[in-house]
Image (tube, rainbow, N blue to C red; front, top):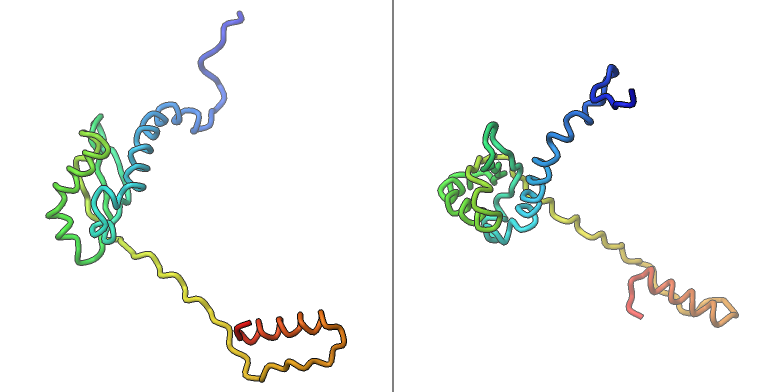
Length: 156
């Protein structure tokens, strides 16, 4: 009577049913995807990496080996990537292993990284800097002069 039951009459969370099946696949694919993303400029070269990047790495249904790599490509550069796909596949296979990626799909969804916003400059004070302050304490007067120089962006 102390035998444990392998089934339950109550519903189980979907995660508990699917996770044991998908965990090995995701673990294997996550390593390859991470290497592909982190070493992309080294794999294909700086020129190609500036115009395309790996978007998705997916296994095709029913196959144990081989993945499809979806590349996001800059507009007007897709034809060149298509001609260079054999070379790109060769470089990826050299880096990740022989049967890692065997097909490239081109996607026209590339967007360049936004340029860093321009640094805001403070407007310069137009009023003259007064060095003769009506303060008797010399330390306080020096601190106020320093503050005035900082605000007026004048050199020390």
